Image 1: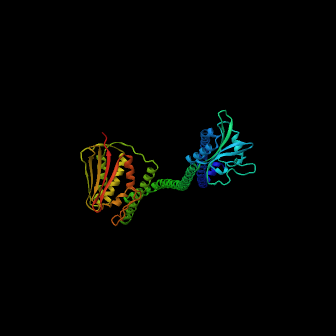
Image 2 (image 1 turned 90 degrees about the vertical axis):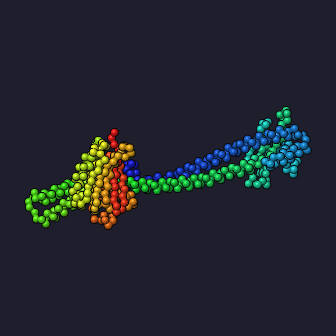
Length: 462
């Protein structure tokens, strides 16, 4: 079995697996991307803070370097610097003493005079003039015995350790500046932004998961739609085949029954003739149903063709009027044609299809009218650009709700007055489709128990 055949055979399972993969992969990529951006953002902030801390150290070093040999003034400046800048957590000046560094001035006055041999100080002392070290790691701030530079610091505090040598005008190193700068404000802002990003990420992932879940659900509807479409196509093909197969025997039945009734097959009794006439009516109804089904099939499959040509509709209407007059006379109805002019303007029509439309609409008007008349009226509309053909009856009429569904397939108005009237509910649907193919329009106005007016509109050929 090839890969294509496998996926075709297991299409639903493959689509479900595809949907599950999307639900997992897409949120995972969004999470990874967000975390990656947050980490890069934090790294950029750290680099900026490190450069800022070194810059601050250079500024302080330049400010107090002239007082290195004046302990009291140096101590006073150190205290004033801390007061003027809340970001300075502590500030010390240390003098080299062998391998150690002794505190000569500090904001932590109890440390003055103490000697320290922290690796961080030694590493900073080895830096070039104007350079130093800035770190947020405490791993460098230990002595040989493993004691920390900051033994009692608050682990929740964020700060930078800065140390750099201070030189005289000759470039000789004289002392070491060591300070601890608070980064708590920046840390709080970073934490806030990170948390906000995470919350937004969670909402985004939730929305994406819901969307993808809905998409997977939509795939079910797509599959259902495809199946319905396949079934609908099979139905159309069945109707087309069945209609064609029924057409021939129905035509034969109608032919033989007609021959039997008119005596072509020999004399028959009156009772037999009445029975054959009933068979003929049933065969005619069946032939009409077969023809309607064939038309529906042709329309839905796009096989119904119309040949549009300029037509003077007055002659066509008069022909259909004469053809249907027998039905009107049987019900003692008046069938009247009132053209607005002796010769009507030309419109683009397929004559045979237009006859089919008129037979259906005028036939319906006669069928649903018990007494009174059926009128066919023509007039011009829209300043002579449109020809309107109105078929007006004094029949049973219909409600607004019934009128709204009039052009649905297989819909028939069902009430006491229509129960005995035979029909398929396809005629008006077919009529509307044919009219639209001929660039015409159909509208219906009706009042229950008063009558109905059907209006056909066609553009006039100039």
